[in-house]
Image 1 (cartoon, rainbow, N blue to C red):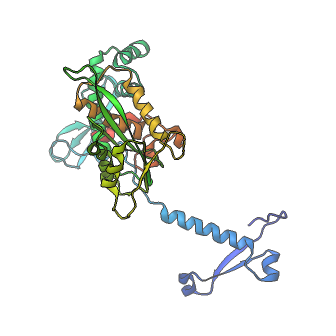
Image 2 (cartoon, rainbow, N blue to C red):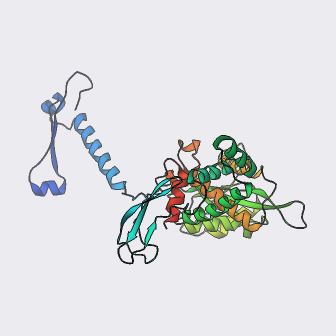
Image 3 (cartoon, rainbow, N blue to C red):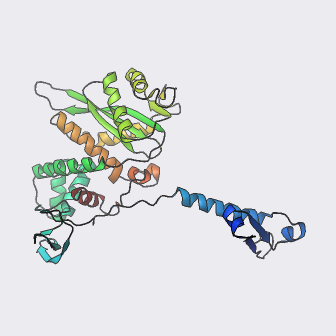
Length: 363
């Protein structure tokens, strides 16, 4: 241990009288500093070493070894589901070479589908389309971008088919994880325009429920109205996917929240009602993180005229929830995604879209 007053080092030692004393943690400490050798007291150097060992032990105890899912899981035969497979040459494609495998039980040869099997365009093109779509570009602007910068010709209906196909897989795959969230949540609602026959302006409501600690979007539900039964849907969804009973649920002044929060959470382990209703936008605590999330939704919805139906609205909400939690980095949490901060075991580095589609295809 280095001295803070002079240019010297002191030797701190921990010894045990016998094996039983070691098992009981009864150690004898010594230090070569003058404070310990002359006064025979526990000096600050011994205290520093004891504190360092205590912190290291607590960190090791609290740290859990989590298996990070990769894009290379155990390979199984798609015909007989056997794991007794081996490599069987390579296949040349227009985008490179692909490893082939053979099943030692049924002699079936195959390649591992990473979500882009039998697709005409490359995985990079498809994932670029998904990323541009959720960053606010319309389908026709995406077509123009691919043609102008990558010399790739697609039609806008192809872009829509890609989005519908992969969002269903990703949203279903994301539901398998439980996020490690905090105990303060924020809830708010925003509108989305639905194309409905006989109606010129038909809006529905998207309810967003977010964890304040990790910015993880716990629920994203679509309803036609804003009554109590509608406000209960995101709360019930969050209660289903988490094991946390929040200390506070921050909302705006919508009256439906008061009865909805009370109905879903009051009496679950504690007596008090966790609902915290805001008076205005300036007084803290405020609902600014939810207002910012609604802005992200509006960045996407403002460029299309309407959604086609209720099913499309639900698919859109599920896709936005997946994009916000797993793909989009958040400046408020140091450039991480909410899923990373919530302890979800996915190594989404590089092309996050491609990695997550590959994981979803193998499950």
